Image (cartoon, rainbow, N blue to C red; front, side, top):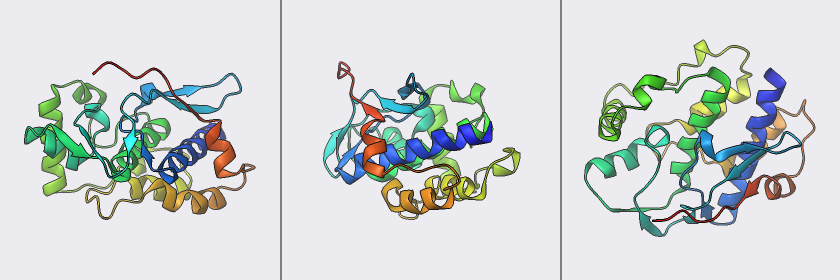
Length: 199
């Protein structure tokens, strides 16, 4: 249902923007870390990899939601990376694409379970060659603001990638047919820490 998908999208963008405004990146955004509350709200959980933006942290994440810059760091066998909002933005764009389109933007579900190195090589190759746009033409009923949101989050060049906190207010205004709650209030009810995972 279009309104249901839009509701989830709005909540996710608000939640991630709220985190970033408080100087924290989630670092492992993926479908498995998005939960639905009893009230039907999208809740982001599992903050075991969360870290302060701009700091150095161990290189770790879920391959299918990894941005091309971090994928290249993996292939270079780096062990640490700088925490960025742009990494979360790519992962969030991937999540939103799956919600609306039922597939990953740049590879199939079958390819998503390939060995991580193969997946990273494919993503890095695309980022340095064809840089395809997300195939939004295959996604039925997607409003224009959602298309713009996904396209902004899934920019191959991290410098061009839109950050959730920079676009959240405009996105809420553009999709205001659904009653909006304040960013802070919505986000505070849409993140829940879980026990840190073992290293």
